Image 1: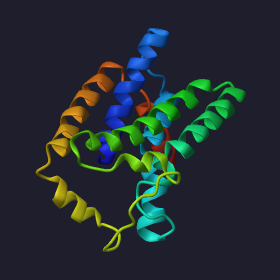
Image 2: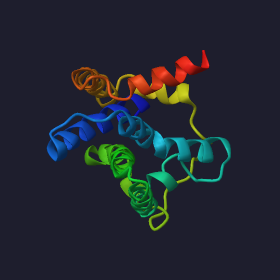
Image 3: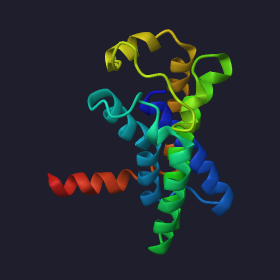
Length: 179
């Protein structure tokens, strides 16, 4: 899945979570942490595999529930210690949803979900070197799964607007201070 799809799914899950738990929309800070969490597995694994060759594929270390679940627990406990438990929840929903959504194509034979248990379950290394972003984009264009990401993004943007654009003011303020 592409970044837009991961963030869209993470946002939809998180806003549903805040509505159920607090009867409220997401707050600004947790919404930003959620976005980071939704991208976190790729921000770690892709560079380490594609550019540094440290990992066998772009879906191993930070996509593995063996690593990710303890990391999320530590992030939550650390956030709770500083009275920011909701930041830990947001990071966890983003990061865990990312890994699980990447495994979904296994339901129709599209990928091997073994990466979810790496290093306990081995994964196949790249045979011809790491893929390129353009190569991945070309191979994704006709896939229904790729097109679904745009639908999910549209829904997430509508819900984000309905929620009052949580996180946007913080980003605007940060950018305004620089300019």
